[in-house]
Every structure is written in structure tokens, then in C-alpha cells.
Image 1 (cartoon, each protein chain N blue to C red):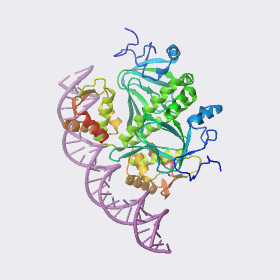
Image 2: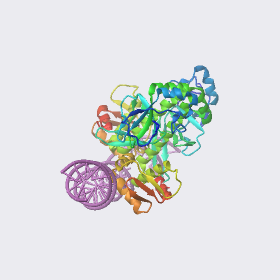
Image 3: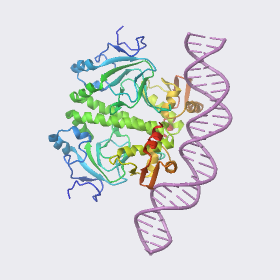
Image 4: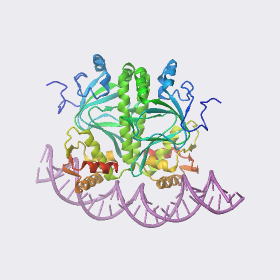
Length: 245
Length: 245
DNA sequence: CGACTCGTTGACTCTCTTCAAGGATAGTGG
DNA sequence: CCACTATCCTTGAAGAGAGTCAACGAGTCG
């Protein structure tokens, strides 16, 4: 079995893997897409490949921003904490997501693995030099960051103005839009995060999330086979709740 | 008087001005900072310079994203609307801010002038070509977008988890941090937006904003000489309320 | 002066939170 | 195999913070 074979690994956590850019699963979606084939070697010389376990953090809010990361497999959550423990999850990341955005020289959030996750890592300084050398990376980065920003703005609307029911519906639609490989309806949606994470993402409590899901279930819009899955029965109705159409 | 002299203009709104990049006030902070002096002419050939009045919008949510903008003077607000009229202001922009971020090919928000505002405008396509030519623009853009994203994440924490008092305190601290040219305390803070805008930015109602400001006044933390100004009397205490330290 | 906008204040309502208890499932060890 | 424990989710009852509805004061403008 090749050393970069992903999936259920039993390596020690945060182990550096012997992977490569050429064989990367997400070459076509990641920021490095624009790098010419023959230059990939350059990229690899500064890249490190990591594998981390659920619950582990790779960066911490307010730590010096030494690295930037790219998620190549698995899922992560980003969050900000208040001194008294209140938490806001600012986003969930999946394959292809970029990570390590910082305000000046410190990370603006903590990043923690939701599942077993693989990443590639670049020293920040050297990565910035790459931008000067490969303008296409800059273009790609700008595009990714703009999408992230648009997502953040949608989330602000959700957090500032939507009701609990609208928030939960929006969340399910968001998850479903990510996993629409299988176009068949109704969609059985895997939920990789627990209720606490959902609540902290939606600016609610776990009780409200639970009650709201129960409400959607009673209305025949979703069904909940188990905690880790939700089946969307009436997607149009769910979407109209989410956007209040 | 030179035609690009900003300030209280009586030109027809959205008028194209005869300005130039060389004489731009914000050359050192804007995204175009990295463009070599001798290449500015190139930039100018695709740039247009606008002057708009308070209340006018330059872009509308869901319109095709044909242009990107740079605020060279004045102030703007960005917001998203729900069909039933609920509004979330996602940010206030001042001189040097970049604008026109889009999700794919549509604007993700509406941008409206708060005061008389001057902007420079670039066709999106041609701007993207510039990125390929001047990597420094890409670097600058990446840096600006990262800062915007960090700001958006802080705002998500505010909207998702902070109390009304904490939100208002955070808002005042945010405004004050922008206007800290005069380092003298207590700071007399000009408030260029009205209560409705503040409420829609903080995810509150105008009544709650008003009551909360009154509360802070009663506690001797601020004073309110008039609706358009707030004097911060106890900045440290305000900051500790904002961050719950 | 009256009409209008904007901000403040009061009384009441309501959505979501808090506090508390109980059910479901999985893992552990005797 | 079955307590025992731990974690996660659900449900109920009560409470609080912010929203809603309404009135009023201050400033502005024609």
C-alpha cells in the first residue's frame, strides 16, 4: 500500500507523510491548481504532508501564523473562543479548503479536526514568495478568499437576522449543497459534526437545535434515522424556510 | 479647483471624474500599491473614477459582477437583504477598502454610500488580467481579503455569541480603532451611520441599540453629546465589556 | 407652524436560553 | 453477559434578554 494512501490510517497523529503534489487528490480544486506541472517539484520542497486525528488542533487562535494549510481529506472546524468559554464556529472545512488566514501575523481562529484529516502545509513566508513567482496562485487564492468571504457574509445574515428554524434549515441546505454528488432525492445526509458543533455554528444552544430538528421532523420535512444522518424529504420546502421565500 | 478635488461636490451623482492614480490619496494603502510607478498609466486606461451621493448604491446583490471598486474617500455600507425586508449589514467601508467581492459571477451584497463617496472602478475581467501581469497586486489582494475575512469572523462571534451590551461596546471599540489618529483620551467619536444601520450591523433593533447606549452612558462609560457623536470616557472598561475580559 | 425624520423611553410579548431530568447508545471491566 | 459509566441527544418547565408595539421629544425643512 502506497504511503500516501488516505483513509483510515493508523499512523501516529500529526505524522509527516511521504506524499506528493503530483498524486494529490485535489490538484484540480486547490489553490495550487495553477502551478505548472514541471514546477510542482518546487512546491513539494517546501510542503509537508500531515495526518491528524479527530479533536486535534493544527492551529490556535492568536498563535503566530507560521504556516498555511490545505485540507486534502477529511473535515475540520474553525472557531473563535471568548474568555468565558462561549464559542463561535466560523466555518467547517472539507477537501480543497484553504486554511491559515490570519489577521496580520497571528491566526484569527483555532482549527480542529472533525474527522481524520490529511493536510499539506507550507511555511507562510515561502508561500508568499511563491505568489510573486506564480501569479496564477495569487489569482486562485483571490478567488478562494472571495468565495470564503461571500460565505462569511451569508453566515452573518444567518447569525444576525434568521430565526432558529431558518438557521437550521440553512445549515441543512448548506450541507446538502456540498454533498450533491448523488442527485437522487430524498437525500440521506451524513452529519459529521455533533449537536454542540452545530449549535456553536448557528449561534444557538444544543437544546434549540434539537428541538428545531424535531420540529422539522414532525412537519415531514426531514427524517432522522440516527444522530449522524438526516434525510431531507422536502428539499424545496426546506430551502424556502432557509431563505424565507 | 482641480476636478478631482473631493469633498462636498455638486456634480451629478455617479459622475465620472477626471482623476488619476498618480494623485490618488490612498496609493499607499490600496491594492494598487504594488504597481510600479511607470505602469500606472496602464491602470488608468481601464480605471474610472466615480463620485456618488449618500443613499446611492453602486452595486446590488445578485447583479452580475462586472466591476470591482476601491473606496478612495467617504464611507459605504454593505448589506444583504431577505425577501421580507430583514437586513444584515456585513460591513462598513472607508478609504482604502476594496469592494466587489463576488460569489462566482454575482455580487454577494449591496453596497450603498453612507456619505459622499469617491471610488475608482475597474472592469472585473481586465482586473483579473492585471493579476497575471502584476503579482504584487495579487499579494496585496490576498492580504486585504485575509484581513476582511478575519474581520468577518470576529463579526460572526459578535453576532452568534455576544450580548447586546457586548455588541455595542465592540462596535464602539471598532469605530474608535479606525479613528485613532488623535491619541488623546477621552475620544470624541464621530458616528457616520444612524441607529438603523448600527442595529442592522449588530443584529439588534434600534430600540435595543438606543437602550444599550443609554445604559453605557448611565454607567459613565460614554457620553452622547448628540446623535452623531459619542465620547468614550472609559475606554479600557468599554474594551473589557466588548471582549468580556 | 405643521410635517417629517430620527432617537429615546415605556409596557408588554415572545423566542430562545437556562436549568433539570431522562432516554439511547457505546465502551469498559468484572 | 450484564451492570457501570460516559457521551450524546431529547424533552420539559421556567426564566431572561431582546423584540414588538406605541408614544413622545428633539431637530430639520419647506
